[in-house]
Image (cartoon, rainbow, N blue to C red; front, side):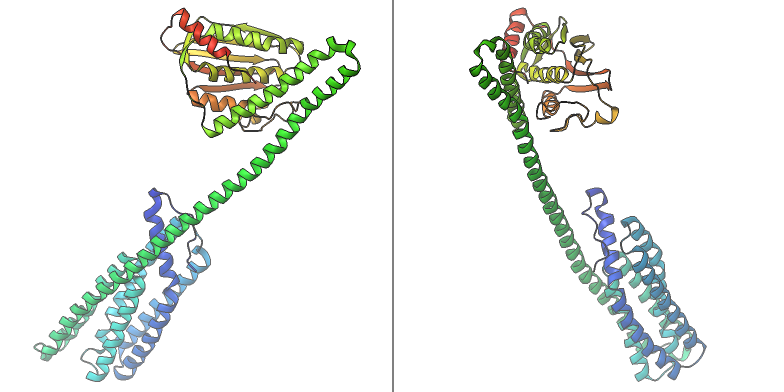
Length: 471
């Protein structure tokens, strides 16, 4: 099994991810390659000790066995500690291991010193075949990481040539031997073959890694789509349950009041305002729902026109004043003589939702709607003396269906502030909030100003704003 099962990399880490994959393939293929090398080493070592006994053979057998043992130790450490480690840790291990693998190439390249021109031609031919076979095995194994394979060949083949030259220097009587010259030429041909093997093997590994990367990304994409679909299903379930719950209360109230009124007509003056209040609540719920659906579908289109701030605030006071008085609250307005270029319906929905929230969650005191002219824009502010919110809640209040746990009311879908944020983002405005539990809350909507507009245009925009309903 491949050692790396990490998520698909971003473009910045792609090169490191691919190199770590190459290292993983190296280590996955290490055991079979080294078992084959160990078998060839045993044959070559036996031939050397039998046919060319002496210090050089003993040193080579001991040194090569030490290199093999070092490789086994490194492989075991990798499997136990680094197989599932982060990419950076695996690459650090690769760079440390590289030097040891190059030492292995050097040791095998020095093998001809032990048998060239020292044993019978038949035994020498077998020794050469074993040595060159090890080279093919190790280059094929290292080809997953092309730089390593190139480094191995760059050490192994020159070491073979150097060993051949040293043996030639040690036997001057063979200096003119055509056999040694042909051996050198064959080694150069062998080097070309090694290079072709490394390139071909690496190409197959690269294609495998690319396929793995594409599959990993496809799996991640499918997982993300599955997660989104599951979240959408849970969201739909929560929405339907919340909608049924929130609509049930005012609808039931209308039915109860209407039945009561039919039995006791003389209570019309007392019950009619309650019926009106319940129908307004139903209307507000549907307005919130439709706003949220349009935002979610991206169907809100900007229609900018000049808007007088004073006319907008006066209109909002007319609409929300009776609702505030019904709760025993005072709605105060502090307008400003400024003009904006905006979508009046969207802006009115934003401020209207903030006012509706402020009135809903304020039991005593009042609500202030103010406009403050600043350099470069107008700050539209809604202050209340309501229950307030803890600092930890401020990051959640703009989420869909979120209701303040300590609100003490079940009115609404919990969509009001999500709609405020969505509309404000669509308009390019910034919404900020400050709150203290038990003291109240202030929302600010920063609206950049446009060049001054004549009175009739401002009044026309205000009338356009008045055509949208609040929630």
